[in-house]
Each structure stands twice: as C-alpha cells, then as structure tokens.
Image (cartoon, rainbow, N blue to C red; front, side, top):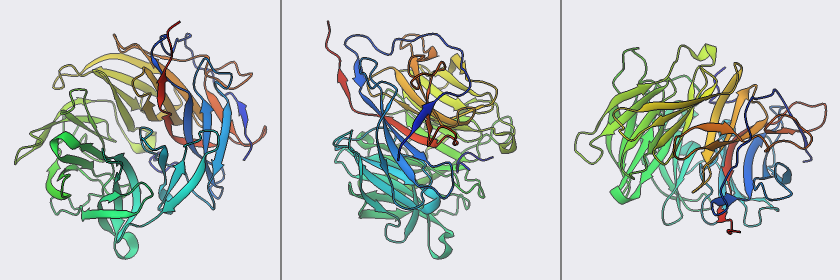
Length: 411
C-alpha cells in the first residue's frame, strides 16, 4: 500500500485499545480549540467525502462528539486540507484523485457548508498542498499540466475562493522526475520552498525548489544528496520552518531529514541530518507529515508505527527525546498542532483507520501521550471513530485541523 493516495449521520465507536495514561490537554489559561475539523472519505470509493466538526474542548459537553457535518456533492476521495485553520474561516480541502479542491465555509462551525470548488487553475491541474499568505491568498502546488496531465505543474497563487491570481512553471531539467508536492512560505525572507513527490507513486523526485515569493520566480532546484543507505533523498515530501522562523528542514517519504543551507544565497544546498528506518513501500514504510512545536520536531513514522520527537535546538544534530508507539499495525500519517497549544491531532491507516486521536506534548521535555478522555461516547479506548452506521466500515479521515483557539479564563 502507498498511503499517499489512501486506497450524513454517523455512529461513533472504538477500535483497538492503545495503552496510555490520562493527559491534561491544557492549563487554565492555555489556548483551547473548541472544535476539530475532520476531512474524511466514505469507505466506499464511490461515496462522497465530508467534513465533520468534532468537539475538542474538554470542558464542553460536546467533547469527543460529532457536532455537525457538511457533505460534498459527487464522488470525492478526501486527502489533504490546509495544515492550520486560516483566518477568514474558509478551509481548502483537497480530493486529489478527482483533481478537485473544496472551499468549506466554517464561519459558523456548527453549520459548515461548501462555498466553492475548483479543479484547474489556468493550465495547471491536480492541486495538492496549500499555504496562506499574510494577505489571505493561498499558495498552492499543482502537480501537473498539459495534455494528459503529463507535464510537471507549478506554483500557483489563488484568491480565498480558489480563483487564479498568478502562477509559474515548476519543470526543471535538473530533476526530470519532479512534480510539485508541498509548499512552505517564508514571507519575511521573500522565499517559498516546494517539494517534489509524485502523488501517483510513479516518479521519484529528489529535489526541493526555492522561489522568490514577490514575483513567483523559480530561483533554484536543489538536488538532495543520498545518505549512507543510498535512497534517503528520494520522494521529497514536506518542508517545515523551525521556531527561529528561518531554518528550513525538508523531509522525504523515505524518512530522511535534510537541513537547508544558504536559502538566500546563490547556491543553496542541503545536508542529511537524521534518518528514520525505511525499507520498502511494500512494507507500508513511509514517513508522513511532521509538525514543529517549539524546539521539537514531531514525525510520523509508519515503519515503526510511531510518532518520534526530535529536539532541534541544534538542527545539525537532532536528538531523539521521545517515541510514542501506537501499535504494530498502526500507520500514522497526518498530524496537525493546536495553534499556541500543546495538543496534536492524528489520523492514519492500519489499526488507526477511521480514528481521530488527540495527543498531548510536554512542552518542556517533548514527551508525547495519548489524551485518553477524547473518545467516542461509550467507548473504552481513546480516539473518536467515524462510522456510517453500526454495522458499516469506518470512514477514512485524512486532513484534520483545530479551530481557532481562545484563551480559557483563569479561575
């Protein structure tokens, strides 16, 4: 299995137990998000996707319950959303197989609705990842363009409803197998970093690209060097900015972590600074999404069914400080952090299929634990499980983000 394209009313249940202790998700004055927005697919490949709103505030009677749902029209296989809920409360939610993205209006969280949708932007097709600009527009990677969607796509700026603003081609002979995958904006440095994995798992991009944000000029296509294993540099997945606001780490689906050097120079490069275990996609090995929380890097590692926490105080020498194992058959993939908080939302496959977990991080040590009281009503195991009916298969949650947090008043 290659999890990059994961092969109305709801009943909530539980799946396999996950050993954990109770975790207090926040202090009295810590930011707390009232809701989780969950972008999920029907278990039937021909079924529609939907966005569900779950209660995420432990002090609320709706905690751990599905409070509202918006269903999209037609068949759509839920994939990525934006990684953080944007200002304006309109969330981009992608259905990659259909080449369509939905704009979901969450101004009223208990009445979500699809406000718009789009496919191509000019010649560019198959949108994938999104990041907001300070002005409220959206930078997006489009994997393809041209006849048969055979050519590499580009970097596209869209307005908040998905209309084309400007765009530029990503193709570069330096990496003939690149297709634009993820996008990361460093607005203060006038730079954008995109990566080059193929969602259809046919090509093996081995580069990241550096763009000038002000005019969308492609400045550099940087080939990642292989590491001791020989293939850590293939299938370049995500880029994240560390908490200093300027250091960029690029990951690969084959579990390499690369530190970007000289981002603003005429010859940027990268060096491998850490690698997690990887053997073969046939063994469901893959490193999925990471998240940065303070000085800590949290990485989903499907090979070990775990979330690994690295201390990035010295980005050239990351240190493993914790690893939360979720079970032999767990395939963690998507994670998203609560803005300003210490909680992480998680979805995945294998024994995690259908489940949404909330994890708690200790901001001093980086230690992770499962929040045990976020669970389906009546369940004994942590996690909320989405099902269409009592006897049916679980739905397929993918992108999950916390709502805008508010400060809980001190007592």
